Length: 81
Image 1 (cartoon, rainbow, N blue to C red):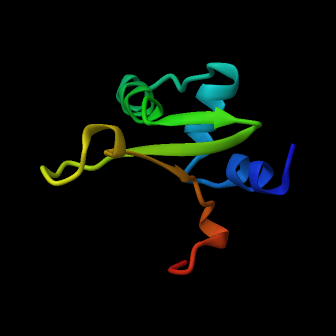
Image 2: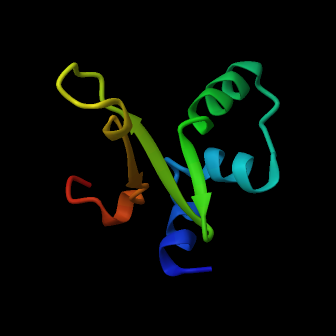
């Protein structure tokens, strides 16, 4: 596991999503379950590193270019923390 993967797993922002994606663990609260499962649809794990997919909604961008894959940056590495 890489350093970025460890930071993502420990990050408060990504902890519920990584727990769900890696081990399918969900909290007991039904509201949290709905939120996490909805958010997790936009994330994918590649080599233990979490990536987020974003869909650009503009007319000027061709369909294949609308799907953008971003590295999920842990809170400690963001510039605005």
